[in-house]
Image: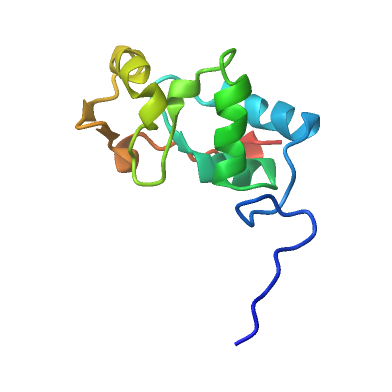
Length: 119
């Protein structure tokens, strides 16, 4: 069976879209708009930005996410990223988000902006 090559603009994970300054700014702009008490996944952010994937968003958040509410971005299964878990829990609790065993209830707290609010 032939192996498929990732597209030319794919990163090491095979996800599309390089992490450039425009991507960093777009990711931070999305996270900045997430209301207190609401959460998004890394994949949600990539979808709202329109390029990249969860790994690229995680890379941006780990390197440049300090100025925004980084604790509102979680994994697709609701788990908090290991490197920031201890710092994220108090921030989330202060916003009314319950954290159990390092996990949040995405069904209850997931932010899903409608198209009219995103323009």
